[in-house]
Length: 244
Image 1 (cartoon, rainbow, N blue to C red):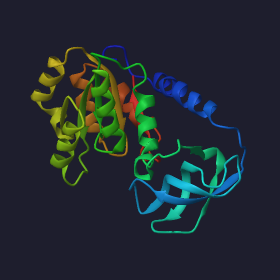
Image 2: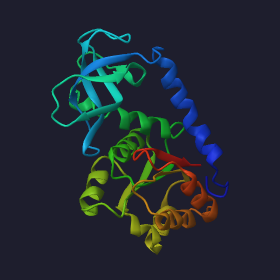
Image 3: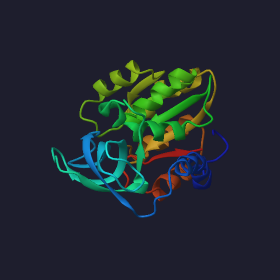
């Protein structure tokens, strides 16, 4: 929150509650595995690491035919054979959930957890918003009457297309990341109906310079923001970090 400082402890506390509730809602299955035939997945890389599938053999608390969303998958695109998935990393989806929609359950859950406490009239800044999480953040903000300011990462091949997508799904404002360094961006922040309540950064897609520019615009602590970015775990490419 502007002027209040940025700390990793606040970041961890913000994410801990929704993750704990999600974990508590899942059956305790230890290290049991379940065989799943994958049906759909978000395109996040050369291999298939998450997505929706159908349980091929009963086990791990699941029945044959259950539709599940699973993470920690190790498979190849187009692989028709069932794969072993740790049961604790799978969750049963409601009957009739379209596979293509369910494949983005992870992005939706991440966005929902990050936006806990964000409501009507609040403003959210999102750096690296071109991904699935960023698109859901923009949609949820619009649905709640909040204002999402979405910045597209510098490494995106067609940033203008990503900007149009974000505007189309409900972003209050969307622009390439370098826009954060312009006086016009500070004008956008000044025109918001309320000071930004939350800064979300996808650390795999945003450079520190863009983070610095946003923090300056928010009148926050650049040094503290840089330290939080440097200390975050960038190995998970979709681990959106909230700096609050």
